[in-house]
Image (cartoon, rainbow, N blue to C red; front, side, top):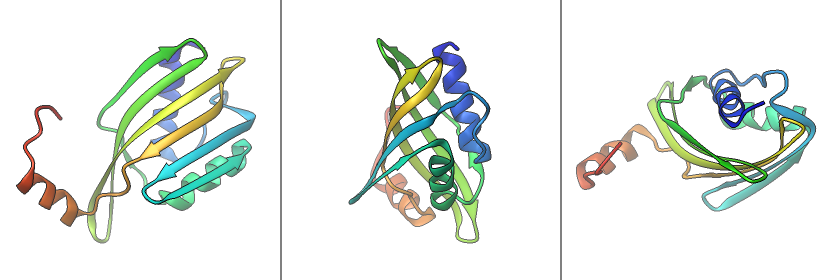
Length: 131
């Protein structure tokens, strides 16, 4: 599987909370860092369960970029989703190791979930040079 194909499958996973066939190895290691916390899981089922617990609301990935590495890929992405408080946002970076065409290790660094109020404060105080 190509780097782009793996990235596209991972984006589909983010928007559906269901791992497409061939995306992860059976023994995939997840190392997830969020502000002031770190979690690790082993295995596809545990990774998917962690995702569903941390992001129960389905959303979109409005932007992403993938770069190949000698042993896998780096994926930069943004997520948006909505709940009863409004639209939420986060930015993330994943460094993934690939074995036999599937992700075998995923180290993910997340900015944390930005509430509607945090996004509004950010928009008032910061002018971004690009989205």
